[in-house]
Image (cartoon, rainbow, N blue to C red; front, side, top):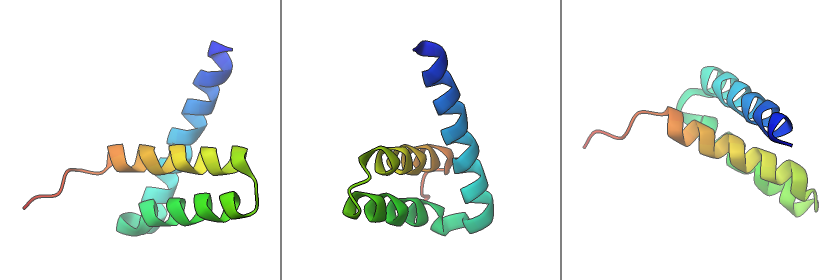
Length: 66
């Protein structure tokens, strides 16, 4: 089970990096939209994955300078 979790975490991080590279500042919103679409379709597992990707993107981005 731990190995599966590590594989899933690696995939989430890979998707997050790719989305961030492709969409820049809009990557987090893109992941959130995908999560919401999957939730609306009743696809909880896919929605959960996209929420994890959204969270990973949030962690990768530098804090806002104010």
